[in-house]
Image 1: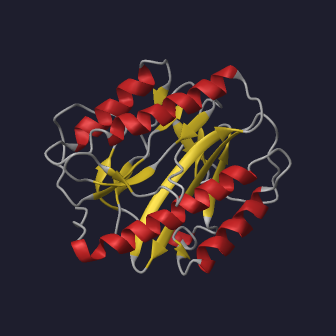
Image 2: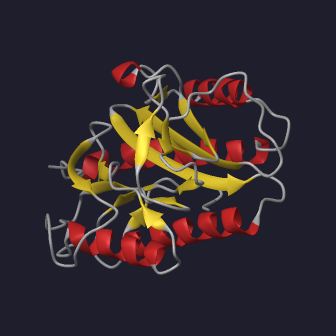
Length: 254
């Protein structure tokens, strides 16, 4: 179960989230045709380290990079390498930060340059699904309320929801319970409590929901070759409205 954040620890996890929000804003500015994914990796590593924090993905279960860069039919866990981003690519960026023992996790997708209308719509629908899920993250609600809100937002637009990968608790570890599927029924699952920290992360596919892992052991792709998009924020469950922790200093979101 996600450990409730104590009042004295709130500023540490908020600082972790601000660093991560700043990283994502910086990457978004870098994402232009012709840039290599390995260069983005260098920038992210250097920035996080300079803030006195640590890239949480680097070395996690052997992952070799500070961020995941997934392109077009790649769903998650793409590894940065000497690959160049082209105009029209649908690019998903996923980054984790650890600051003084507190973890945050966030992701966004964007079409670089002018992409096809389906790619643009997939990105926008997945972004809306993230916020539909976040609005359900209130004390007394259940995990299924988040899952149902995400699933209905995506499927009513004709896209599919990835089943094999889920959101999760986060805070003192990168992955904690409860799991937060992106599909499910209202009123089912773990009851949410004030002070829980959750990573809510819808992953939507253009075509079917099935995915597979490439031979590198990490990169998850759509089984049918369709496009995929991914959004994620780390949030604090609290009364009134959830607090999005992974905004940058300018309050940038996506």
